[in-house]
Length: 71
Image (cartoon, rainbow, N blue to C red):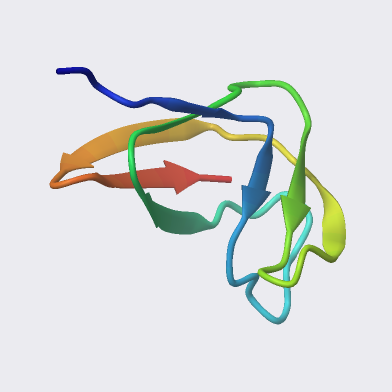
């Protein structure tokens, strides 16, 4: 028996249409994921197209395999 944890150096999500520099955005992913805090990581669209570099400012486990993060 074990617990699977994914360490992610990229964020691949459905990216909002009009991202603004300096504004915080919230997203959720399934699974037990850990994103690197306070260092630049890549933001990718679901089709693997790079959008830019972001920084995770907050992560929270919601339970049931759900995570909420702010970029």
